[in-house]
Figure 1 (cartoon, rainbow, N blue to C red):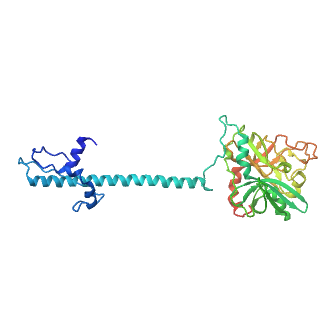
Figure 2: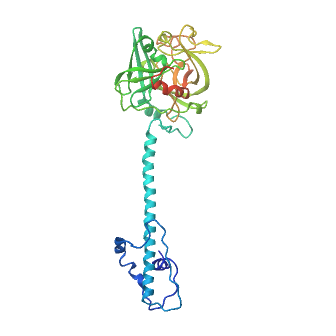
Figure 3: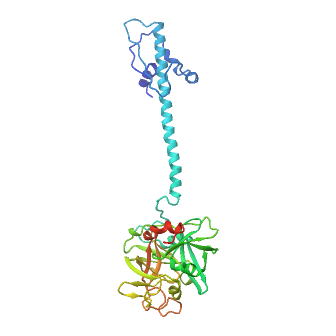
Length: 376
């Protein structure tokens, strides 16, 4: 505070006329006893928070006397009250701002970590050129990918699923768990750490070939981050994680080869059992890649993401992941040029670079219903 500002505020809060040399200097005790004044407080001033007016006594040409000194002291006290009130008000404002910032920080952190907040999480940072850091994606997403086994009287089917919630909701293909739905089969979930538990089918959508199952006694699981499949462009890098032929945690990579590729696949257990529980697509005008057509069984039709990332029987229900580590599709079908079964004995078993995934945006439209136990 400058000397000029101190002189003006200390005496009355507004400029005073010149004082004779013998006038009392009542303002000297301003620095001597501020604590006492603060403790006793003003008895005739306005309530805190209200504006305080100070007035300078007019100079009528008379010499200041003892009464003038009293008036000067009263003016000084009123000025000091104004200063104290202003400081208190400023402290209250600053305190409120600081408290709001802390509260907003706490609530912001809670919102960012809360499921269903609408925030899109990016588990992995894409490289500067936009390509996928495959090893980083595998490390980040693999704990959220499970193997699903369905045991029926007719045999065993193996597929993949992705963890949706910490308490055991898991997304997969309908055709992976159709044996449990149609034939009363037993569903077993195997986690990345090797532990296993049973599961029940919660909700299904046969027409889209998706289902949600719930693992028993699940808690503290790591959910996947769901991305935006509409934002994907042809040529974007992608990664697939699954359990082809029971080889758990297999990671492959490639690109998006095409979008909106209409495919129709069979999803009933009787149709998928012979190809390891994997869907073989039927393309409009081209027939079925398995050579069997789609007649006589339950089918699903959707506008698929096409990828050249290697997909094989056992990848069904697993994630197709973008460069940010977000799930943009659920792997569901592969093309087999000869129509041979994708078993170990098939003459052309394995991926030929034509894999298909259900866009995650299509899944999101029914996901809440499936998680709520509905069949749509």
